[in-house]
Length: 594
Image (cartoon, rainbow, N blue to C red; front, side):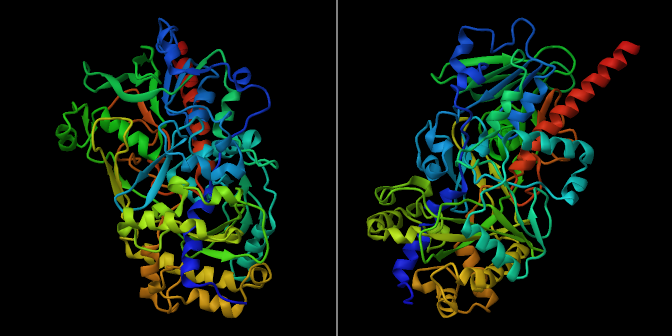
């Protein structure tokens, strides 16, 4: 078989970002109008003509800011006993076809409008990224793969294992499925085993060394089921959900020894400003669940953070905490394009190799769009913006983007009948930070992840690429792809100067592989940190130095849990909701017995 030309292969490889759209998608709900099932969801502007923004005369027991992966299960749980207001800056996923269908996966990321379910940002490292802007959060735009955190992670962070093991199934019964296990995914699974990533752990949600098939939030019809659907388990009499409610800052009472959170300022879809308040009763709280970008950003906008940075933007200092926004981390990923010998059904991540080398190996395949769609500009999911570029991130100029767009239409449709092998660093040691650029809550903050600044991350990446080399040479792959052993060797040994940073010419040269890692780094959207336990929040996720304020989301993690974090982020929403309810029940009993 002829090997592909360097230029064509570089373009094929560019297309990873469009196919990587195969690593994201959102929820469908049932066939009834969503308003019937979720009668408590309204536009933020409705708060002008109702008591929804202040909870009536009494105020809310809880205001949860962020209707995402953690916020939805948290609000649903708290509503069983208390009056809850959930504020979400985006709309609903139920009627958004781009979000709901696997075949439309990439289109949400391609939508750069202000109403898109995805808000893109570019880190200072030069890597394009995305954050959710829709009810359901990251579960509405991710790859759908569902797998729990390891037992060692649960033990290390100090969670109650019994409650954890009750909270995961609560989520799973509502929105998680066993995948169809497509042929490409089976080839990846079998190839991982041949490459030595053993044992075969079969289908399981558990985090176990070896090769496994995990869960998915896509059903057999390719419909996504998001955390937004968990709101169906709310007590409808106790919950109000406002969509297009863009939180601007928190409101504090500064009269006591410590500042006390009392409410939230938010803008509705028309730009009209509103205020919502919690009750004066003991136990009422504001809880941030805005994600690893949104939560530290909102704390900073509200005056909690490094004093000097806040004063530069004329933000009144509520509490000086130098750790807000610090030690941000993202799990870097690198990928290899593999051509197929026949059309293959589109699939997202269904199987994973959990190695002892500090990396996870996953894969996606196919492309669900028409030939016309392929020649369209797909925004941040297109290679034109350099998500997986043939040039280092900081050299991805406007001219390079335009050059790709001009050439994209010449790519044969067959190029999309391939797959990608993904190597993700499990526990990155490289750290960055988040800082405000301005005081506009709708704008992205400045984010730096410092990918591969720590030597151990580069070592892990090299280990991952070497595992991928074995995987591509495995018999299950060779029977499935356009490659034989000779062409695989050629493919893996192409030089960086051939316009394809696939694998450097000297595959045994660690320095060359390290350069490949740096030059082809992308994200799999698993960034975390910025509100770390022990620095910004305590072990109960209460913001230190402030009363009645918590942060419950991925910004509190120092590692991304499991191979893909959504399971644990949803779990912690349920877990902390139950824990808070139990604490309040215990407190009320104590008061009664006095």
